[in-house]
View 1 (cartoon, one colour):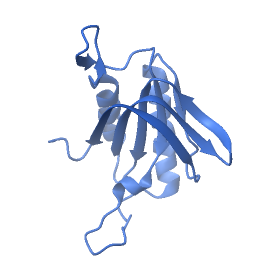
View 2: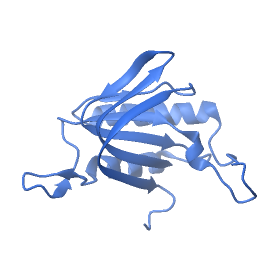
View 3: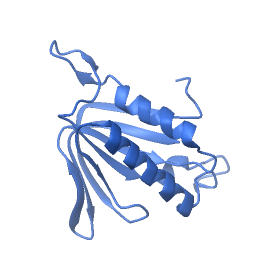
View 4: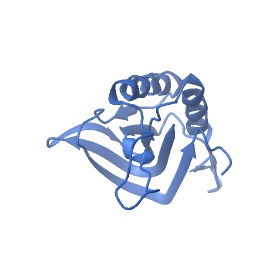
Length: 150
C-alpha cells in the first residue's frame, strides 16, 4: 500500500462539476493499493498517517499529529504503482484489480473514520476526479507499507 500525504490548508474533489469531498486544514491522501496488500499493510499505513507529526505545535515546531480540528481527504490513486522499468509508458501491473482495491479502499476509509475524531472525506473510487488543493508548507510525505526504510 502506498500513499502520498500532503498537508493542506484546503482541498476538494470534484466529479462532474459537483464537490464530492472537501476539507479545510488537514491531510490530502492519495492512496494506491497493491495486489498483495493485506490487513497488516492497512493497519501499518493507518497508524503512520494518524501518528505522523507534521503539524505545528504551540511553539511553531512541526511536532504534532493530526487533531480533531483537521480533516482528512482520501483519493484513490492506482497510478502510485506506475512502473517505468521498460520505457516511457507506465505499467500498472502491481496495482490491485479494481474490485479488490475498492474493498480495501472502503476498509481504509472505515478505519480512518473510526480512529480519527475529525472529518474524513473522500473522492469516488474508480471515477475521473479533479482534485484542487492548497498545500500548507508545503509538506509532502511518501509512505509505502512494503518499503518502510526511508
